[in-house]
Length: 99
Image 1 (cartoon, helix red, strand yellow):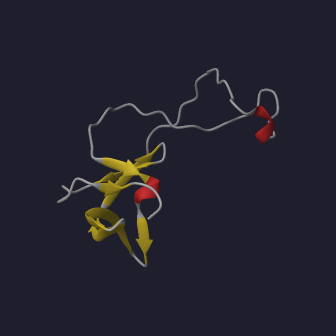
Image 2 (cartoon, one colour; image 1 turned 135 degrees about the vertical axis):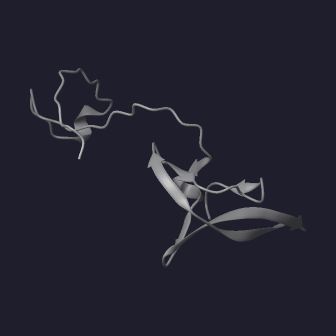
């Protein structure tokens, strides 16, 4: 387990009325100390089915009917509503919302 340290910091809260806070309240947070370039998709693009995760890829369109192919993927880390895809994807047209 990594060392636990405390630091003094300042935070600006966007929607103060949505949470109940007290002056000088203790909070816990995460600090990202590395920068990676990874393939990531919005969390809204994922379809969870039993123990598997899928993405939908555009296949074809005919008479205003769109066909998509379901493709099983492996996921990794997630941050800021994006999820890492740990393998190369075979297609490039991805449905990112509404699957």
